Image (cartoon, rainbow, N blue to C red; front, top):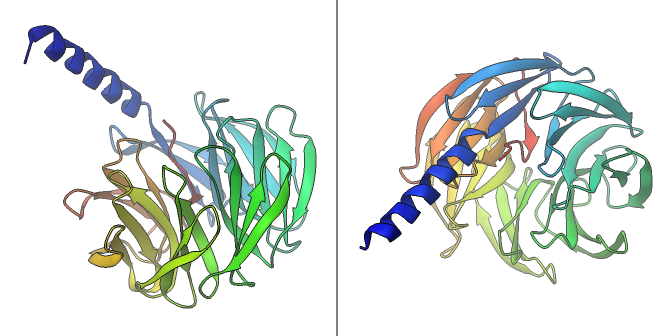
Length: 316
């Protein structure tokens, strides 16, 4: 290999390492009313922020360097500065906010209201409410498509997924999945959606454009949330009542591994390096770090009481 090319590749590699070194994981500790901030390079908690209202959901706005924390008992969400690691403000929504997401451009924040069966849309700069969209019963997990065109919402009690057009802020489609979908993920190409169905102990795979059901894969007891890694080739699913993470091959759509983690695993998110997966363990008050290549737990990091981290909780 020519020396100039080797130098270029080395520089790119160092740049990527530097970017990943800045990645922080924001873990909601619901019973502590706090958020643990993990430095993912050093694998340790570097700050604990007080957030009242039983914090649960997490969303990252990379454009504005902010993190949003839903507070079900506070009826809204907290806004954190992801650089300075401090609280900026709180925003009122209504009933019981749970699922939370930010769009890819960093312009909007979406908050699912569990009791009001709606998704509130906020301006990410002013935090004015732009619109409230009625969805199915008990909306929970949400995710935005890579092209920033669609918001997908898991309606737990209705056993369905809603697709919201982000240009019109209206529902385009709704389709049935398994029993009580909760966590949800879309792949990096915007082609497939994966939902963790708590009561049917399985994962539904949908075509992201038409919401057509492609497959159903059985996993462990009470699957809670999902995350993709290794270029979308593997799907990781937290099984609450088994204290495990199921691993699904997204080509064969078969479960290929079951990994023991902490007690009552809930939130799960992939690191920007695409090779590590972080799992928040509710009953053990810690986070398991999984190597996606070896499918082994490589570290356990103590956090706070009742770690949930529901959503996409790692910055980059």
